[in-house]
Length: 318
Image (cartoon, rainbow, N blue to C red):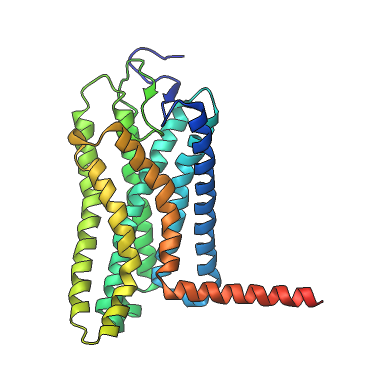
């Protein structure tokens, strides 16, 4: 059902990754397993931080926010993707498409700002450790987290409103796995250069600005680490921010490649693979990276498992 030939229809068709039935079933099993693993992993990270008082610090407060963002981002895309793997009709209603674009774009922006905030936290921890607790007080941490959530949400709301005002001339087929902004803009039957400029400007504000702040923080961090005379001291200082640096390199790199130059953006297939990476791989990597590369988290895991094992033994002897 179409309203007219110059406005949005009631439904869109997502072309997805493949039309082969057997491949879709295999992908359904794979992505369902990955989705459950990442939801469970991030849930356990949040639970561990809540239960262990040693992890009640700014770094883990921001990590809790990052885990919530990762799970929410994946949930905004993956369930719809799984349904379409098994359904013959790949339609998505107009309002659902708009909601998906809003949440995925907003949560992505929130993550970019959060990573910059975490870089600042690492900078203070390494470069000014004696005043760390004074600088990174509860009020500042809460304010930085709220700023991250608000900036990403407001940016996404503006882009969603602008994008869904474009006329599509009855074009309903989105060549993507989700209602991603560049894919939806391509549906328009008018000149979209102003939208592409808006995407680039917002990318500079919410992507390049945090990225430059991250680079500046790590330049200062590395400079401070190199001044430490003992090898053990340098190793401990670098270990403080190594896990965060790993996430930053993966997250910012692909986003800059995709959004900073819409006119010379990657191919449709590359866009799909990048979206899959953010929706399926990144939320699963964060718990692994922060668990395997962080002694405090590993110690908290061991303590929690020890308590659980002791409780199980007591129950078994009764």
